[in-house]
Image (tube, rainbow, N blue to C red; front, top):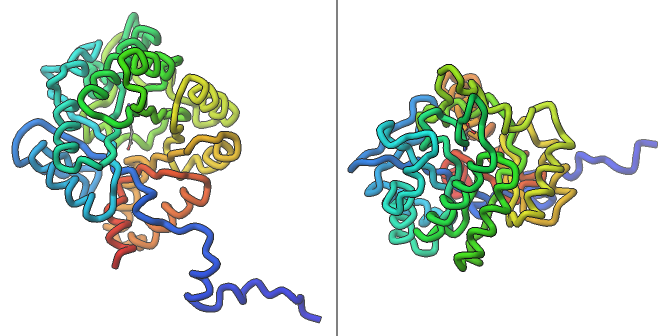
Amino acid sequence: MYPLRRNRRLRTSDAIRSLVRETIITPNDFLVPLFVVEGKVIKEEIASMPNYYRYSLDLLEQEVKTLWQMGLKSVLLFVKVPDALKDNKGTEALNPNGLMQRAIKTVKNACPDMLVMTDVALDPYSSYGHDGIVENGLIANDDTAAILADMSLSHAKAGADFVAPSDMMDGRILSIREALEDEGFYNTGIMSYSAKYASAFYGPFRDALDSAPVDMANVPKDKKTYQMDPANRFEAIRETEMDIDEGADIVMVKPGLCYLDIVREIKNEVDVPVAVYQVSGEYAMVKAAAEKGWLDHDAVMMEQVTAIKRAGADIIASYFAKDVVKLINR
Ligand code: PBG
């Protein structure tokens, strides 16, 4: 006799497939990265990220209103800092009237209920393009962590709901948590980039912010002494558990697609929300292939974000957020 179970019964129509679908993508899944620049009426397309832009504060205001109307309620802010303001210690990052601090206020004024997360790392402010202070050809861990704590405090004072340290220094979550508690910012959260790999997929992002490590003697040419080796798995769990012990409210795996095994493993291991960052290079690859007519943009995009959520992501930071929401609302 033929097997009593025929699995294809559950796939016979769109209605039954919708009924048994395990992973549903909604606007609530997304955290929208936004790039901010100085100036007025600026909306510059990023060359390696088609249809993604840097906004001046006036247009940022419009953009966040648009996002809010679409049901996208959380943003992750990054700033592009003029070269003249960069130095080894990222001094400008602490300017209470710096671009990030003004961007936070701009978003909160435009959309008071929008959740504002901010990138915390030195690289956009660093004359060497590193996430930490460069000292004798090395990245100084503890001195950097102290600056990251001050930077986080500055963002919290400007109104950030969450700070998102993306630097991978050891012990920085504890430094940040203590600094926030000391100043009474009990409700300011920390989303830690806990398992962040030294990935080649960050290329377009470094174009967007002009933040790549500079090619100079005595400056490390890559970020491999702080970001993780893509070959490692147990280390990702260790990093993540330590960040939770130090006070991280949300942990993150980054990049997304190449690391979904890590996402699942961490999701099974921890009891805090897990975020996944589908990074710039992942976005750029889909856009480029679609431009050539080699892939179906919307279908590939949906398959990828669905896979990220299925793997265990509670939150997806993605440059596709608007494209996805437009598609699912159609
Ligand atoms: C830097 C930072 C990077 C990204 C987010 N924060 C790049 C890097 O580590 O060099 C990458 C995001 C992306 O590629 O979309 N602190």
